[in-house]
Image (tube, rainbow, N blue to C red):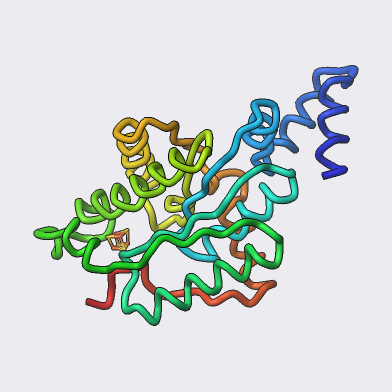
Length: 216
Ligand code: SF4
């Protein structure tokens, strides 16, 4: 936090363009422009998370910058249920250790099966994923709107195995249908994925070997 304040001071008072540019690069590296805007506008963010390894970097950054945010765990796509419980508990552990609010919505794989009916043989990144993202993001949007958040976002696109634009499309659709803004920050950029991997190793987090809906 102290480092963050120092950088803001330098940005405002930098005597040369080169020094100002150096400060901008620092802020970009840590996704801090997003954080600055949040703090200036007194935003309250709901962050949909799929698992601890994907979200730990973002949660740590937002927490260190003093942002007002809550982590939402809504993943009825994960199966079997024992796997769901394992991922949920690991994500909650990360939040508890930092003192970040963690909310879970009820797990019901039957809801996900219904939402993706007829798309069972689609490849990952295909039409089944469209419906999977939309189901989870709409639930997040509804929860955010009902509970006084100013916007919602997700880490569903942080992994290189995911199509970030596909996640954003679902986020925009959910935002329009529910009536609350979806923040499209690309958490993978500026070393976001590498940071998540490093922190996951440091914390010895459980890391799954498949997205969620396999094995069938
Ligand atoms: S591969 Fe992942 S994102 Fe796609 S439908 Fe399955 S659980 Fe959902």
